[in-house]
Amino acid sequence: MSNKGRVFSGARPTGRQHLGNYLGAIKNYVELQTKYDCIYCIVDLHAMTTLEELEYIKTNTAEMALDWLAAGLEPEKSILFTQSHVPEVTELHTILSMFTPLGKLTDLPTFKDKVRLQPQNVNYGLVGYPVLMTADITLYKAEIVPVGVDQQSHIEFAREIVRTFNYRTKKQVLIEPQMKNTDFPKVIGTDGKKKMGKSENNHIELALSDEETTEVVKTMVTDPQRIRLKDPGNPEVCNVYTLHQYFSESEQVQEINHDCRKAKIGCVDCKLILSQKINENLGSFREKRNQLSKNPQHIWEILDDGAKRARKIAANTIAEVKSAAGLT
Ligand code: ADP
Image (cartoon, rainbow, N blue to C red; front, top):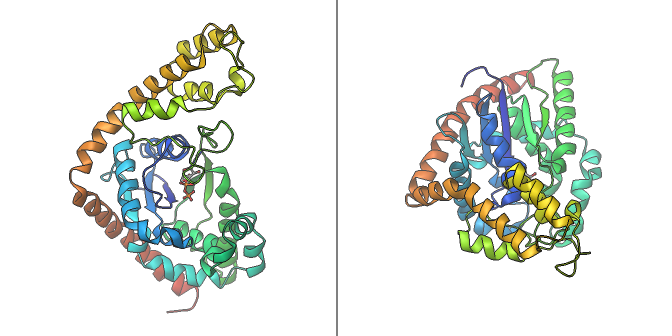
């Protein structure tokens, strides 16, 4: 890797990616590759905090990597790998945990949310999640971390752990990461209300066929005030219109805005145009994905190679951290 400045981002292996993942994260990952040295990690250890996912980790990892590659992540330029393939991260996690006040971890709103969501499975990993995330980032001395809004408190937390570690060891070994916000922090799902996500079942997968995309887009909830075709619509409260802003050309968006307000276009037609636009935008992604999926072994080879490159960086950092902490 060069000295362009290093970006790190990790995402749990959630399998096939949806438009929310694409606009909120992957698109940004692809663009960052031109300016920075990027390290993108499928954080399979983090996925273990919700036990139901165990049996899906492997297939979800492969499906997600397939989507990332098809969307334009380039293994020649960036490092793509799986978290557990670089065991140094667990070592750093343990060391950093000694510099982390437990009360702060249990006070984090994200931890409290998890406790509410899975009261039957409040495991240690859920509490330690932000420490492992700090290890993920600092192991590679990443300066920039592209994050969604939900992860911002964790980055702040990571910065605190780094400051404490550097202060207590009197060595500036670890780097305080900076957040880089995405342009699309919250893509709303087909229900028109909640953030698009698999668990809400309101998502549109990138890898759907054109016909499947059209079928899902047809189910999207539009402006609830617009009941009959002749009622004028309010594009600003319609998620179909919002998605048009991401996928349609600006003249088309203006025309839809105008025609919707004047009741010249109905929701059915508006959705049909949207699905065509999504399909056009994702055409080359889907073609590439089909090609890549013919050789699943190749995906694992790419992740394997990425892990080897990541481990070289990790080994250096761990040696420095241990030395700073008096563990030599
Ligand atoms: P994780 O648990 O790793 O955050 P997710 O699948 O929820 O896994 O998210 C992966 C990435 O995609 C994150 O950067 C997240 O912010 C982004 N993302 C997910 N859903 C949306 C959405 N509906 N709108 C914008 N960004 C999203």
